[in-house]
Image (cartoon, rainbow, N blue to C red; front, side, top):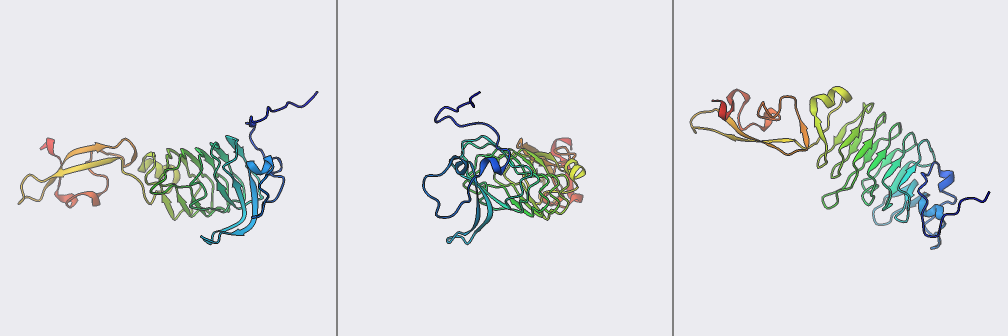
Length: 259
């Protein structure tokens, strides 16, 4: 039986299961312009330093713009430590249980990945899967569970709405500001035993004081932004944290329409 032929120009949608099926040659800064299909899917750069930024690419997995696959699975592959993703069609990337130990601030800045799995990467210490002030990355789901060495996780400026960080017990900084997350702070803490260091508040409040010579302030309005984090009891209690109040908690009189 003849093997199935893929028509010219039509990419295969088969998930890439290992480096042996995706990479056939080492990459170097002086690769020929005409690359193999494997190199267009991904390649590993053994050593290079970017002269303009000083960034080192050592044992770095590159997924270039030319990649036509929508899904790539490298789970369990131990051949790389860093990653640089620019595939315009790639939506799902599995890097779980690999030797990944750092994700740069630019690693996913130009990618279209919506679902990323980095679970079980026990050597990973820094993961900056984030956009910037001018670019919001399309990442929607991130599984970072059981990354026991992870200290810095930053997902700011993304479309993230589904996040798993169970087993990440050494996090020092955990930033999820400017995302699509909707979480109860108390429930998240109970489930994961960690709290984000920066996040968006779901509710905003407006306060008034009826008479200048009286110390009492009242909340006149609560604004539901639809996304963000909140504590149990909000918006009914009238504030997110005490520091947000225009007065001390003793001088807070509750809701204006209840007096």
